Image (cartoon, rainbow, N blue to C red):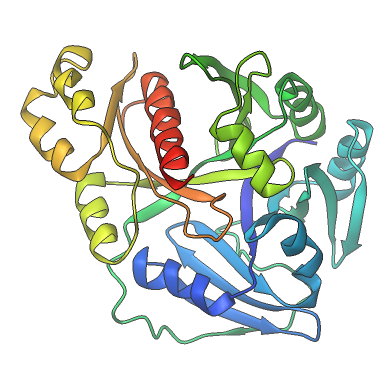
Amino acid sequence: MAVHDVAYIELYTSNRKSVVDYFVSSMGFTQAAEAVAVDRSSALLRQGSVNLVVTTGPATWKFLSAHGDGIADIALTCDDVDQSTRAAVAAGATVTGSAHGTSTVSGFGSVTHTLVPRQDGPSPGLPPGRNWSEVADGSAAAPTGRIQLLDHIAICLDAASIDTYGVFYRDAFGLTRYSSEYVDVGAHAMDSLVVRSASGQITFTLVAPDPRKGPGQLDAFLERNGAPGVQHLAFLVESIIPAVHEFRDRGVEFLTVPESYYDSLAERVPGMTAEIDRLRAAQVLADRDEWGDLLQLFSRSPYERNTLFYELIQRRGSRGFGSSNIRALYEAVERDRLAAE
C-alpha cells in the first residue's frame, strides 16, 4: 500500500497563460506538453524531477469558485493501484474517479490524490486519459534550471486536525511521522507534523493553527482558501543565493526578513559569520540541525486570494525543516498579512 514518489502536482487556475508564464519566465520551468479537451486545457511544466500540470477550463470551475487558484491534485506513484486504493478507503478516503489504470481518492479539503502505477526510470508526469502532445522548448529566455526536486509540500489544515491526518496518511499510504513542532509566537501559535514515505521521496508538512490562541495567518489562509489546502511547495536548489537573486530579477517577490534576524545569526548558527552579509543581501534564512545547515526563503503568493506560495530550500547536510525558521516564516507571513489589511 506504500506510495513512492510524487508523479505530478496539478494546479487549477482561471488564467493558464499567466500561471505558465510565471513558472517559465520567473522560475525557469520548461513547458514540455499540452493537452486540450472540451472541459479542460492543461500544460505540463518540468524542471529537475518536478512535474507541474497547470489546468483551466470548465472541469476546474467548481474548485476555483470555492478556493481560487491552487493545488487540486497531488498524484502519487505506487506498486499496486488497487491495493493502495483499498488502503486509502479503509483509512477514510473516498474514491472520486478511476480510469486508465489509475484511481483518484480524496485527501484533505478539496485536494485529491491520483494513484498511478510506479514505472522503472523517471516518471513522465502526465495525467493519463488526456490527449497530450509534446511542445518544443520555446523558453530560450528562461534561466538555467535551478530547481532539482520537490523537497516537501506544506499543507494547511483545520485546527486540531493534525493528528487525524497524520494517522490517515500513515494508514492510507504508509507515510510515517518524521518530526513535529509547536510554534508559539505570542498571540498566535501553530502545530506542525512532518510525515514522509519510506522512499524519502514524499514529504508532507502538516500545519494547523492552535485554536486556543488568537487567529493568525493560518486562520487567514483557511478563510481565504475556504478549506484546508496546499499552503506552499518547497523546491530544492543546489545554491540558493544565486537562485534567489535570479528569481527576484525575473519577477518573483519574496517575503522580507527583519534586520534583527541577521544580527543574531552568527550566535545562533556558528560558522556562518563569513556568509552573513551575502545571506542578508539575498534575505535568505539559515538554520542548523545535527546533520548540517539549511538555507531557505519563501515567496509571496502570486495569486489573487493570497494563498499558495513557494519556497526555495538548500540543504547542506540538514535533514530537518529549520525549526527556528518555522517561527521566522510564521512571523514574516503574519507581517505581510497585517500590512495588506
